Amino acid sequence: MKIATWNVNSLKVRQQHVIDWLASSGTDVLCLQELKLPDEKFPRAELEAIGYRSFYVGQKTYNGVAILVREGLSVDESTIVRNIPGFEDPQQRVIAATIEGVRIISAYFPNGQAPGTEKFAYKLRWLDALHDWLTTEMTRHPKLALLGDYNIAPEDRDVHDPKAWEGQNLVSPEERAAFVRLIGLGLLDAFRQFEQQEKIYSWWDYRMMAFRRNAGVRIDHILLSKALADICTSCDIDKVPRKWEQPSDHAPVFAQLS
DNA sequence: ATGGCTTGCACCGCAAGA
Image 1: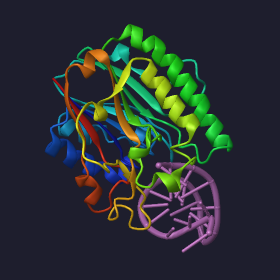
Image 2: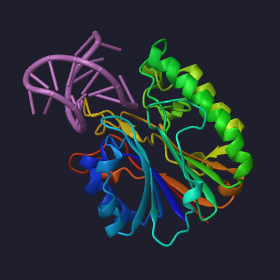
Image 3: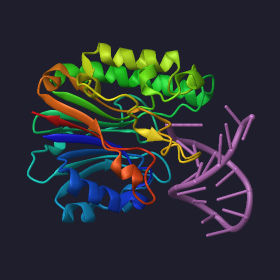
Image 4: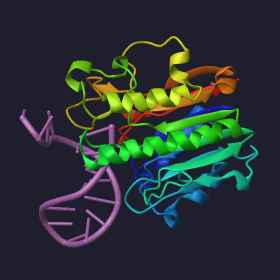
């Protein structure tokens, strides 16, 4: 099973990119973030036409997450969870589904704006709530994958210019500590389970020709429980869609399970 | 130098992203 995550920055604008990438990559399960559309505008029929079922929770203008599943894979509708249980939040950032016995979670972590702001405090509260919920999820589902836009670059090697970024949003000690706490639940960063080239990133600013300069950060991740990490044979970031016309500022991250 | 694009909303310039 090939699983992937992609922040599309508007599914309305990127609908054809998603369809093209699904076809070229052979992905079985694709987690999407930043749909930026309400549920009634989700392109369910268009994705069904190319052989994918959609599970999603959206809202107007902001946020919104989905899981696209190749037809033929077993999904029990009763396993679908939207949002973090017990965490009151009008922002739609989480959807989970059990697919072929694998717990798949698609998550759009808050951006946080900057340390010290109210949005940053919300990010930390949200990270706490995610951690607490995952504690239970991990015991219920030994085979668990947390995919999404984490808005956290875990280490300096995940940042093109660590000096310039030091202490800033996405790399601050508080955010990195939260990432380490997730790892502490028994999750492994799929990307780091393999030999990787240096300076591999998943997001580049639209401005300042950041992509051409490879001035990026690695903030989109696939975390796997031990049972899944044991059967994971590769994890990579596909930069190609970032070169397409009118691209998302994020590139898809994908992993092959057995 | 805190901008530089891109998107959505709404109809103009602003919020938000990271």
